[in-house]
Image 1 (cartoon, rainbow, N blue to C red):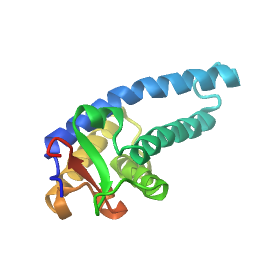
Image 2: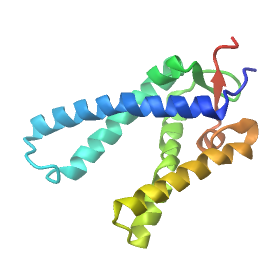
Image 3: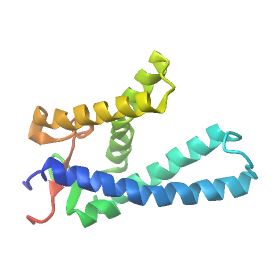
Length: 161
């Protein structure tokens, strides 16, 4: 069984993933805006969010089911696999994708319920939650993120293969 990469390396891959996804989100947004003749960012906003959500799903699920690594994960030598050490099925990848939103949904929902609209409150809530979510790895089996524990997947170090 391969070891779990340390938290710092997983968070570095997470951060790099965000940089790469910026390009994907911008490209998908540009295509959506052209195809729908969107002239203002708030017009067609729900459609744009749905298309972005689907584009991210295709990106992650596609890479996770075909080798278990996104571009950032290849760079940082980490891979997603099942607890038995196999590649993810389409169902497992979909479940993991949906559960990975636990990184973002709880603080966004809490901020909305609290009526917080100032960016400093939103970013503060997000920052605190991200630190807490990462800290959960201290108590989860194998030091995995909560969404991996629930999905029955694990992040492994590929340098030791």
